[in-house]
Amino acid sequence: QGASLVGKDVLLKGDRMAVVDGVPQGSFELASAAGRVKVEVLSPAGLLVDTINLGAVTAGLHDVAWPAGAAKTDAANHRIRVTATSGSTDIPVTTLMRDRVDAVNTGGASMTLELERSGRVPYAGITALD
Picture 1 (cartoon, one colour):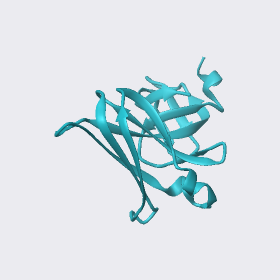
Picture 2 (cartoon, rainbow, N blue to C red; picture 1 turned 180 degrees about the horizontal axis):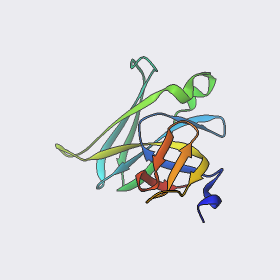
Picture 3 (tube, rainbow, N blue to C red; picture 1 turned 135 degrees about the vertical axis):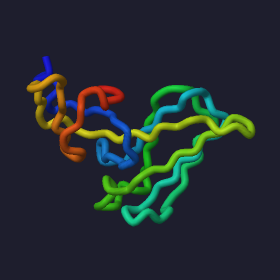
Picture 4 (cartoon, rainbow, N blue to C red; picture 1 turned 120 degrees about the horizontal axis):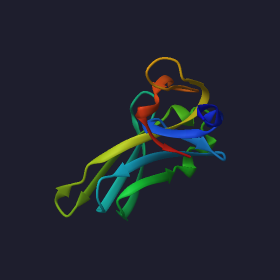
C-alpha cells in the first residue's frame, strides 16, 4: 500500500514554496474562516520580497500562487509567512510545504517517507496527500 505513494506529492508542516506547473506556490491551513489573510513571500535569506493580500478566506487547506516568482531560479527556496485575522482576533494558521515521495520505508513500528526535499519523515507528519 505504501509503494503507491512513491511519486506523489504530499503536504507537511513547513514554510518553503514549491514550483507547480512553473509557478511558485505556498500552502497553508486556517483553523477557522478569516476576514483578512496576508501572505508574505520571504527570500532564502529571510527578507520580505512580496506581499499577497487574499482578503476573506474560508477555513481549511489553501494554496496561494506567486506568479511574480516564476522568473526566479531559486523560487523553491523562498518561504511564506501567513497571518490571518477576523476583526481584531488572530486566526491560527499552519504553513505547509509541498514535497514529493521518493521512497517508503515500512520497517519498524511505523511507516516513514523519504521526501525529495525534507528527507525522512514519519507518515503521521503528513497533513495531506495531493
